[in-house]
Image 1: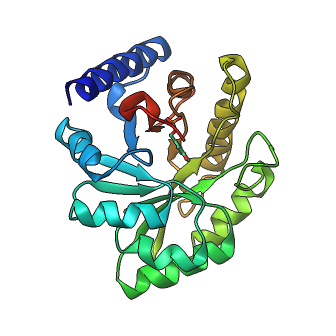
Image 2: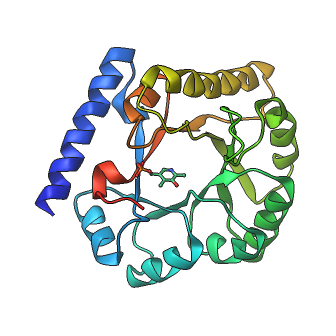
Length: 229
Ligand SMILES: *Cc1c(COP(=O)(O)O)cnc(C)c1O
């Protein structure tokens, strides 16, 4: 617990420093604590140090943890989502960071309607173009956002991306910058139905760069809770 508190304080300092470098307000940068590496007891500690947002990437592993915690916290689904798992997600999670295809959007909308909840979704964008990554190509984002905006039980929260694995922040920076530019291009269209205000980007390896490039949600796992798989 002390170790976790120390890690969180240190992380927060680095986020604040990145905000100062880039003239941003630290209150505009929020953190999802990614707990996919750890068990429910460790998630309880995460919540006890004051983090409120929990990120999980696999439904089968997340559901037992959610039950053990009685749904405490605000849950973010950050992994690739299959349609047959959507019903388990909409009843427990507030956010989905990985909306990347229309049939998935339709299923989220359908299941969310059944439980009368509005799901907050990020459109996942494959900015880097890596074959291994999920997400829409940048050129398809606007059209996709228009279609999803018609679904009443989905609220588009913003855009999400993952940078390539790299130690070189100057390889990563253009990826984050491009996501921000896509958001700004959509904003300039001036369509009130097309709002993608938030940027979910930045993980343990690259979150300070993401803050400098405008991230409003960081997804932080190993830097907070340790471990990797
Ligand atoms: C695992 C994961 C993270 C957190 O990764 P860390 O490098 O441990 O911070 C963030 N986003 C997604 C989509 C993930 O799968």
